[in-house]
Length: 132
Image 1 (spheres, rainbow, N blue to C red):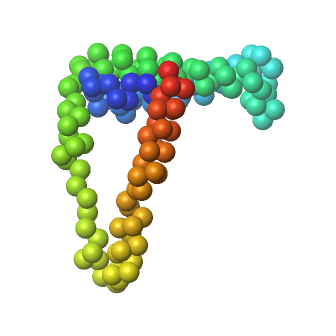
Image 2 (cartoon, one colour):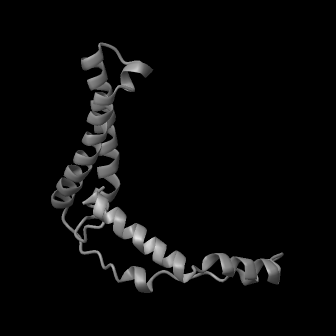
């Protein structure tokens, strides 16, 4: 949903908007299959138009429900700095049965090479451009 990173979104909207958006989308998807094709079957629900109607409704209604819930129940002011300071890395070295070799392998898997980091950043930029 496009409002997932909205600073003013409240907790109720975070929980309720996706659920209501999904329910509305399924109702529109199945309703459009019935209205356009005459019945609700695997074949009619797999047609392009009902699928587009359901997916488009899901995206649009999620945003709408999020904004409505936020302003009905009052906006909040989320502090995004929490993610910089509030998340701590756990140390698994004290777990019974973990060998030094397993711990070294885990540390190697958790770190990214500079070229992998650049690749991820490039993919992130491409994804943002495509989404806009």
